[in-house]
Length: 303
Ligand SMILES: Cc1cc2nc3c(=O)[nH]c(=O)nc-3n(C[C@H](O)[C@H](O)[C@H](O)COP(=O)(O)OP(=O)(O)OC[C@H]3O[C@@H](n4cnc5c(N)ncnc54)[C@H](O)[C@@H]3O)c2cc1C
Image (tube, rainbow, N blue to C red; front, side, top):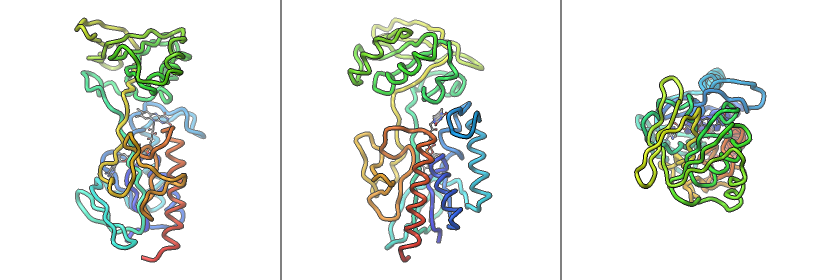
């Protein structure tokens, strides 16, 4: 029996694993796709304290080396269900079934994609889903933001202070964002708003060169940009755990301040959790909190 099973090897899950392993717990990390989670797509990380600059891939591999060196078991298996047997948790994957005293769900979130030509190919080469993370790379350059909600408008306000020009492309004629943000965007000196339009193609080979737009009357146009930030929302990866958790209106898992779910011994960390800021630092913070709760739970309960 494991002491802790961690679902997801992003920054939240791996931080939780590090703390649990250092408390001498027996830890299994289960990962459905690639080690490191979303951050593996970041070309450069420049906002993690103590690390001046690192690629997303190197950051992820460092996390992997760290948990393996500390003695974690790590398996590439997707968790499809969790069942309870008294205090014990039965974690079912596509391949196996494991028993654990506690579970830390750190399954993260995925950004919604536009699903247009060139998008996937140019991720990290001009296509980004995080202005706070990547905006700095577009200092004095030309960028576009597609979206019309709070995140898109916050991205535009942030990028207005960095980029030479920011196109805000929105498929409707009004925004679904707070008035305060809309007013701020309208005051931004470098911003041009393109209403009733959507991006239909993202062009470039080694790096982004331009985007094709279509408006509601089917008129086509092309804009030269160095970067595009796609801010049309995220989807939490919680589908397999819904029976153990409460969700907020956007589908994120609701916890208390210490990352408890509604089930004793099941803790929630990182981007899958209902909260305001989703960054590596907040994921690491959640992972730490969950680990401390899991360590105490394993010590104080009988199994
Ligand atoms: C392109 C990009 C650049 C970014 N740049 C920065 C940056 O520079 N600085 C910064 O602070 N933040 C950045 N972020 C945000 C940051 O990556 C996230 O906040 C952080 O990765 C969240 O970590 P997490 O562990 O909560 O979730 P995730 O990173 O999403 O990891 C969750 C993991 O769980 C796995 N998983 C999901 N479901 C299951 C399942 N059923 N079974 C097993 N495994 C499962 C997923 O495959 C994934 O690997 C960036 C995000 C993106 C997309």
